[in-house]
Length: 505
Image (cartoon, rainbow, N blue to C red; front, side):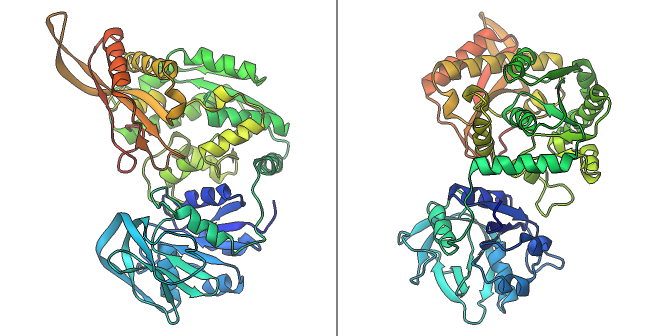
């Protein structure tokens, strides 16, 4: 890939990879680096410094070699933490603000400049910070303020900019325009094409493997399916193993086996439902449940594989950033099944292959389409690695799993029949582990409630609840109440991410 890419320096923001994605959406190749990797960026066309959870005033907070950055003589944009870091290092001062600013605000441009060219006179932006620039660096020019008159955009030099908001999130309504204006300052930036990216991934896979056999863990979901076909395309020795952990949806084992047969990928199935449910018995803590599932998955997978020279996983960037493992600056939200300690140990040994880890779901789907995978497979809703365990708060039991499976099957079937399935990012039925009073057949019932969750999203980093029609939700509720034993109440989840996550655990 052309070295004249857009280098994004990651200071740990939950939104950092969104910057990479937005740059690619503009048609330019972008890649993520840690602050200490600045010299490894080669000769980028431009550099973007991300936001982050730390304060630049803290001892040991993430830093960057400013002299080296300036010597690159390329356009630089500091976002939130990135702006504060530039301000501090260029001679200004940063201190805690009077209040933490989180949420929507108004950007009011106050100087003619190329960064805000074509913006409206008052555009919504998205804030997420507690510090503020108290004293401007020498020669800094204020490009924009918020509605209270506080500077939120600065220009430090001809190619050096800082903004105290996040243009990468959809809540900044004209954020894409701001990024487009910035990228226009780097006319020689390398283009991003999914075919080129596929070829780079294939080259990376061959280089990493060195002829070693790759064992691919597959679930039937979009990510691992694309990974398996990509390994096939790379023509490296590989095996695809599917672990039946007893936490799958109704008839999922048979559907996954048929799917891989259709794609020409040989699939081995390891049946281990009893082992997983036995290990989970009595455990209610969500993090411990994830750890049990992740570690047992490694055991079962390793036994089935017999000898693993390289482990391939369909990990995407949202998994990486939410897990925030010890090598990351980001804050941990939850541990993903492919980020438990034993798998991280394999990472440290250089035995894990995750070629999709820089991608978001829509980019994986585009890659899959380029690989010839059918639309209905690529646009299947995401399914969590720990399976139905994260849709069953508290202890996992066979009875609870039956309720979830049957309710979920009804919900998904009706979404498809009524044309709503492809309009939502993800949908499912989960169990609420509380029994409530109801009436069935003129008799008192005391049974579980279930939760319907359907969200719209671009990348799973943020999500809104799907505005499904009330009559449709009533139809689903009636079908579940009449078709699933042990349920007397159906609720619809209208929370957004943030503050909620998409899954319940």
